[in-house]
Length: 315
Image (cartoon, rainbow, N blue to C red; front, side, top):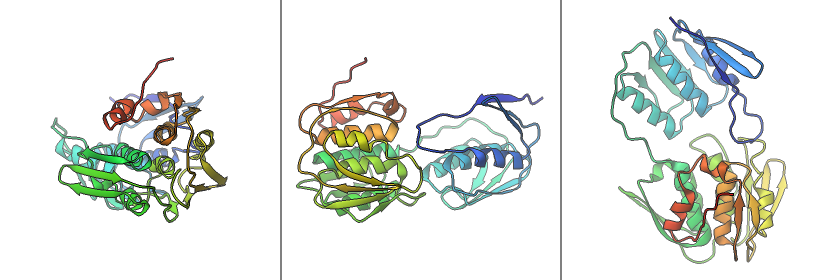
C-alpha cells in the first residue's frame, strides 16, 4: 500500500527564482498525485506509468528526479531535452548497476525501462567537477603549481579552455590534472554561462575571482540565475574592479587586492571569496562559511594542502 508523503518547499542558495514546476509537472505526467498547501508538498504515487516527457529546460535536478521516478513506473519513459551533465551519466550508471535499465545518459534523450527488480551494488561516485574547478581557479588566481588527483578534464573542458586562454598551463593524464600559473594572468574572451557542455554557472564566481588581477577586461554574462552576482559587492571590499549591468559583469584587472572582512552569501560566491583572499595582501576574514560547507568537504584543509594559510574559527 502506497502512503502519501509530504515535504517542505526546497531551499538552497538564494540565486533568484528557482521554480520546481518541471519536477512537479513531470511527476504528475507519470501519474503521481501532488498537492501544494501551506508551503508543503504532498505526494502520492500509487501507480506510475511510463510516457514521453519533454522538459522546457534541461534542468539537472528535474532530470534526476524523473529518472528515479521512471524506474518505479510501468513501461518505458522517455525524457526529451534532458540535462546532459556528467552527473546524469553518473546517476544512470549507478542505477543500472543496481538493476535499472536506462540508456541515453549524456545526450538530450533518456530512455528508462521501468519496473526492474533492484538490488544492491558497488559503485564509485565521480569526482566533484565544481570542487576541482574551484581549486584550479585558486591556483590560477594565486599562482603556483598544483596537481588534482582523480580530476577529469573531460568534465571541465569549458573551464580548462578559459584557464588556458588566461595564461595557465593545464596538463592531464590518467590520474588527474596539473595546473601551473607563472606570471600575470590575462583577460579572456566573454564568459557566458550555459547548460552543459557550456560554461557552468557554478564556476562563474570562482573564475571571476581568479581574474581580479589579470591584465585587461573580461566580460561575464550570467544566463542561468538572476541573482548570481551577490559576491561582487564582497569582492569589491578587497579592491576588485567590477561593474554590473543586469546579467553582465565587467571585470577590469587591478594591480593589487587588500585583505578585508567579507561575508559569503551563497555557496559558490563564498568559495570565490576564498579564492580572492588568496590573491589579496594581508589577512581576510570570510564569514557565514556555513554556505561554503554545503558544497565542500573541507575547503580550508584542501587549500592549506596546496600551500595556502587558512585558519578556521567557529564563532
